[in-house]
Image (cartoon, rainbow over all chains, first blue to last red):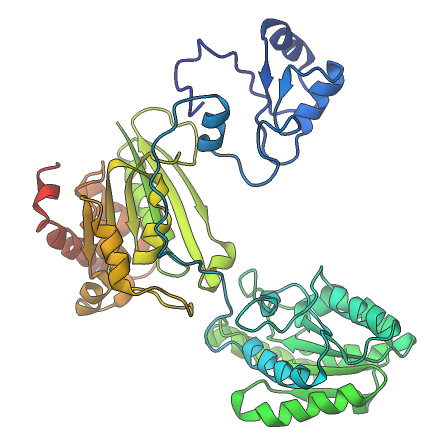
Length: 290
Length: 199
């Protein structure tokens, strides 16, 4: 509509925002037109349905026919092109402009943790760090480049376990506190049950940071959960990821990697996005639980 | 009348606050408005953009087609250039001169200014400095809104009213600070004579 404006005379337009499709209207449009262009966001659902209705007729154009791109968002520029409208002469982005990917906040505890892991991993020579979903997924990208494999929530532990069971040495899982209580605990139980040689690092910032620092159900409960699952107390360690603790933290990680069973290292430092009041509330909650 | 505006900058610079002022002011003038935005992970120092469309007639797309923006208003000079393909032939570029450097390969800012100055209708304002001088560098976004005010299809009164409404929950002092920032920006932009003749 952006492209054809108020001049609807040259196109027959049917707006569909329901399922099942309005059969009579679709039939009327089909009989009236030489060609139907289906413009829809996401998966080409309507286009596929029309192909079914009209026996794979090539009158139907859209994403499946390759006329519109399958990936990315649609916008008036893309749709204007396929309608064959005059293209604006567009100024290019000057080559001096560089990309600006998102990154961890200044002073974030995850950064110090990744620096610790990087130092340890550099000597190991293998790519054995499995990541998870949260702000710390940014550890897969430059400048940190710590995480080697990343799929979905909870998979850091199960991937590390699978790889370790398959023979990978020094498998490390990095998972946040809230992702751990969301879907990391089940994997940890499996690893303990089969005594898989993995080191799980729970990067505990006491918040669901990535989505805006909501309350984490893990607050004050991580140690008890790990012990309850069966992690051996002598292989449940706590570190504070600060520059001044770097050497000490490197030692803790090195030692736990030597252990051929399940180790859990809880890396504790509150998210920098938490307000003073939120931090006080967290402290009170931890005190009440211990 | 239809005005297409692209707002840009880095997460946390107040881009969406500018959008909210424009939206609120346009609604108070009974105009049509469509606004969309890209943020999310950009909170972590990534690029943020918002498309704002204001018209006295119905607006269809919430995205501005390439080559159709009348104004790119940016809180950061490199982010301004990122959206250049959207600018129309005689569109305006308004930006803060203060770079936000959080990447290793950030270009020399003079190279950025050279590119911006290739376009006749540009206003480069040291909005961060101006905002700092009146009490809070965070108000740079309102300085820029003021600097662009002559290009916008909205009255100064409705924009000031929108600022008041949006900062009402904070304090009278914050409202005044932002309104002052707006005026300072407006004053600076009046030096650009070709802008003064535009309206």
